Image (tube, rainbow, N blue to C red; front, side, top):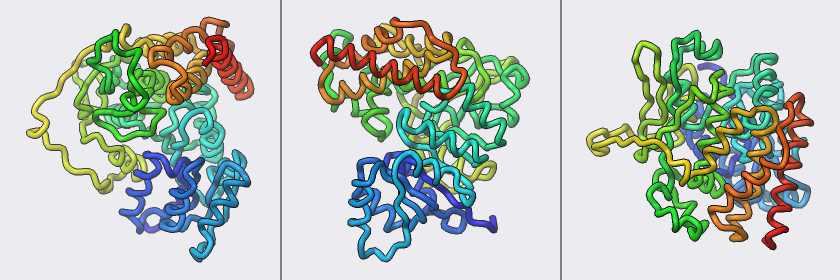
Length: 396
């Protein structure tokens, strides 16, 4: 590769962003950091700016910009600091950018990720909420702009690797029967059901296999993360919810599988390290060193599989129902979940009440048609308001 690729990392201070920068640093002849964005971890963002010397850094507001500039004073950098959603969209769509890592957690990542798509970038999608909220609109934008969309979630990246090259033609054309989406089961896979109401945020964030942020760790513990991934997989791979089966696989070695009509089942295996899917997507269709240790099957010894228990993981049932309902229902599901998880992390509700809030919010009204982005965002806001009222009614 003779031309160095310019990369914007949206959500640079999170676990995905840091892993992306680790891979980039291993290949300076291939990649250069164009822009880094962060939200609240300004000291970490300043350190990354000094290390990677991006042309731009983006923070949420003017106060954060002043603080970042203060921390960068004396570092002899030419980094310009931008603010807000407009800044995020600008560094995602800049004409000089080749690749955008979309790793902002939650609904906040939707508009900048969509800006990258509309600008025809190579988009590495770690922000599953963008597809959960606006799947049809998002994929329509991908097709219109000829953007290259590559999944970063380890499961979706595994599926991508196991599908026919032209997976976008649809499952029926590739002889695919099922997608088997694996899940570790999180920290509460074997916790007695009666004890789930009393688990703490610290316990929920103690994932047995992966190092992740607090919000996604709670989603993994409730298996809402797997529900959101189911919805995302439907859009990425032109699949129906009924074609996607969730499989509990506690070792997190097989990241997902594809079952073909001839009886073949293809799987992608690897150590649980996000640098593998990140390096795969960065270099696609080539492959580069990720820094991940080779898989030692002898050390693993065994691989286990079981179906998920929806009594233990009611969020999985709610997500599948939202996928089947379509329209604005997935956006409402995601919004209610974000409010509920934040309340749990603040110790305002019990772990088991996360699903209760989501269920109550979704029961309030029928889903509308996700006809444009304004409708999707309005459904998101309505669900957040309803979830907030749920908390108020119960004095939380």
